[in-house]
Image (cartoon, rainbow, N blue to C red):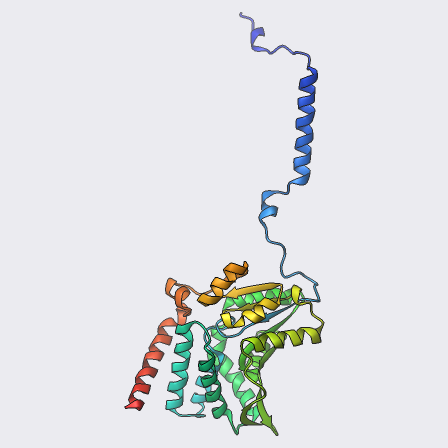
Length: 308
């Protein structure tokens, strides 16, 4: 048999330098394990919304943020079905809707045209009548157009114990119906004047649009005792930058090109629930894109015939 002794290392006494090196390595290992968090924790975003933060609330734009397209257009479709106005008015509403989808943003003059059309239609009707019809129209045209992703964001705030408000240029009655159906706290919207429960065809002030939304959020926050730095706001439109800039947690949802650019510059969070490259580029919800374009084409033909 041959000896295996040469395979076995002989123990050598540790020198002072080796002891020092070993102790230093052990100390460094202990410090790194105590101070450096795991990679997963370091990469994770802080919990938001914060559960139990009573100073926080969330504010959601409606059109193309919570719902595909313009709520006022869907409401108009329902009123047409109930013979509130004629085909030529429907063609105008359809053209306004397709413009809104293709532009991907809200033009003040265009919004004024939409507003005036709506006011002329409801003038002389009772508020209670329109509220009752609005409930039916929500089921017919609006419920299926709510973005599930945005709805989940709103629910996260509700689950955290926070109030959630819609903030929209749509009529406050329509917005209130949508907010209630979604289980939200309430809605800030454009207020149409009524006397004795009947619409006069005029507005109280101006449409809740652009800077007016920011003022509404500021006023509500003061009344509710909210800290805007704790609050969140969500919108698809660059017109809502004043509102988004008020809060500590602004989100760009399905953003138009101007808002996307601004959000990236400011480091705001972005969420896009549209599908398809074309939808992402021009702001048309993919599921509704073909129908919207077809409807717009039909409206354009109808308008052209009228002009002739």
